Image 1 (spheres, helix red, strand yellow):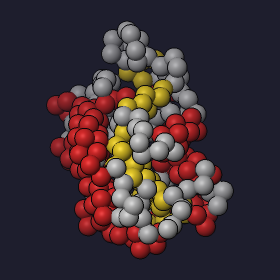
Image 2 (image 1 turned 180 degrees about the vertical axis):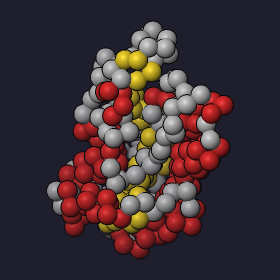
Image 3 (image 1 turned 60 degrees about the vertical axis):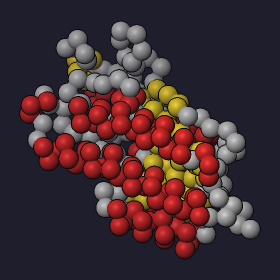
Image 4 (image 1 turned 135 degrees about the horizontal axis):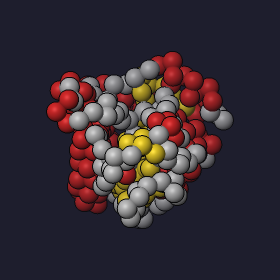
Length: 250
């Protein structure tokens, strides 16, 4: 029986996905790096402590056929899938609701919600059929899964929907030893969060600089969830910069 632990990380070309993929490899996992930009995926691969334990599979998660091919390629190469870090996501311009272009709305929904569902669905297909069956899925929810920022309706709506995906999949996965959980991340220092450290609109209308945390802490939290036995599951975890304005009234 293959004793190697096999993970797929979407959005592995940068940010949280890259940091988590590198942390998983350092922890002994074989990691399939998925993302739209092949060059960036290869950069992630070259940064790994053991590049031979990685496989780059350029993938657009908004394309169901490409997502199926990602999982089929992983099974062909490694034999199974033990972990999906369902991480790929995008944002939209921070503008008033009536000024948000519809193409931006559709792009966010197609990536953050549809793409995450396509990956989750294919993970279930593989994890149900493989022997021994089962595996783990960790969805990247963001703290926007519970609490919005001003002018963030597309991102917030999709991240709220991820909570429904996580709860439904966690329930449906019980019969197949598929553990599904979610990590909600606040202000990790990535390109997407850079604007928080420069000053961002607050709910009361002021612009404020917000603290950031090193993305390595997020990666460590995901690895901790990933290493649990399938008899245990972190359903929801929140990791955030300690002093960011999230709890209470700012």
